[in-house]
Length: 384
Image 1 (cartoon, rainbow, N blue to C red):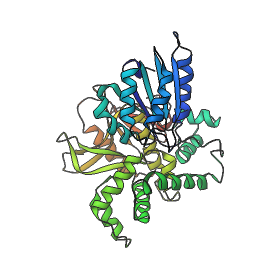
Image 2: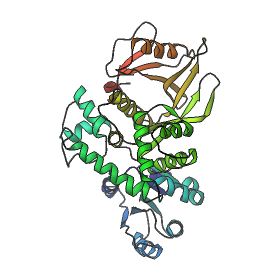
Image 3: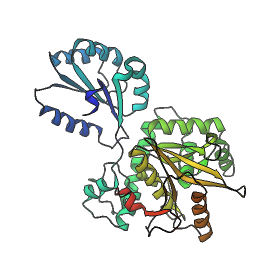
Image 4: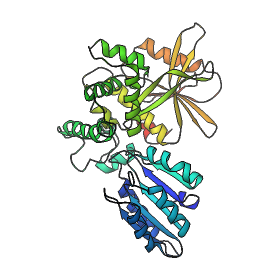
């Protein structure tokens, strides 16, 4: 609603299952209550929709304030020309739902510039998940959220159903087929599935294409570094994976040697994991924390610092927003005491005065060294 005040073309995107069209229906309902009345034209796109159909529907916009809603605007032939004509002839704001909002934004931005804004709907947050499933916050609820994710499929099965993992895998396979394999004509589906399993096992770790190639070679899977980059790019464009660059805090520069990777939804990640593997839950929590931070407007990078003894240490998340910074270190439940001390020492080596947090499954009182220990549940519930 705020974007309508300053932009005339608004793209609403997000993963399949985030409820884009339902969200737009709520927006339409709110607009209907405005005074003076706003004329609304609602176009549901199918494979045959083209420029002529859009312009014909646009005639109903009439004179005065109006809104045109185009569902599933990806792939409409002549879309930019149609939008240009509508903006020239009518006092309209155009709302477009899109499955591939990055591609659509890239396509329309050179034409509409500052008139265009893209809004990406995230999966359900932890509080929204609790409300949707009619459950209360608890450690078990957090586990269910990590396993199920925030895509809207909770009406099909309860989150604790023994069949939920079969449903998650079915949805992940469907997503992979339609949004990656078919869209980008991937010729080696096995390799891209193995890539996603590898990223799931190493969520939050800095990975280079060469490292991934070498890991694959030990399993007799042949893949080139360029193919790794291409496949990671396809998964990023689809929203299945989200990269976080690695930032060298000592030299104050972003590194080119690799990215750390997260899934766009923890339920999709769960579909590619071995749930019996040690540390799986810790990596799921790191994925949840990353998504929460990015959805809260933080620019998130993995930090790297060289300590006085020359050892390299990683900081899980370096978060920047509106001139503020926070350093966050994930405290895994499977970490040894020595690893926990190293993580704390890495935070203490940063002497710029910005707040420092240690995030784990359980919170604790603030220790004397100034590092605040917060539970993942506190963070996801907004008590941060």
